[in-house]
Length: 196
Image (cartoon, rainbow, N blue to C red):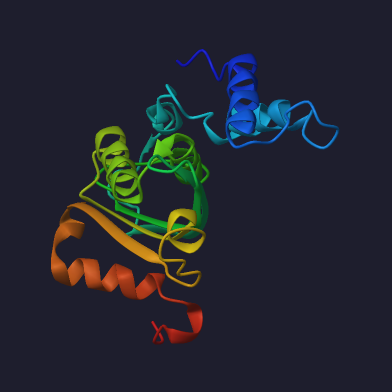
């Protein structure tokens, strides 16, 4: 378990950063900024050192009576890119095909939130979510689709404000292209899905 974010140390670093860019950290406008940033970082990075498996510990046996798939679409996703410490945000879609255990639905967003609350890259985040579910539930298959817009793409460099990255991580039966395509079709916006 992480000891948490050292708010005093973050505040000192922000004061130094403000001075380094030529701003006066003691001005009326910026005096409270270091502590505000420290509080924000404590929230943004609350997942550092936290084991997301804890949210899967209450899985219950189902004896093969679960149906074919558990899918939670549109889980809000917010993280901070480890390359520039700029935010990326979007949606996570998480599916698993149970073997003999299921977990409460609220566990899926908790796993996403915990793993996202660290310096991250989207590609690794999807893989970590998929592996956490694979290790914690031993399902037949897992599929994680992340859609996100990145501050490092929209606000600097190429400045592509409308660009969105999509990554897919899969395990087991849901790594099969046909099974994957079926789940991806279910993830599509409601207006574009065909009648089931």
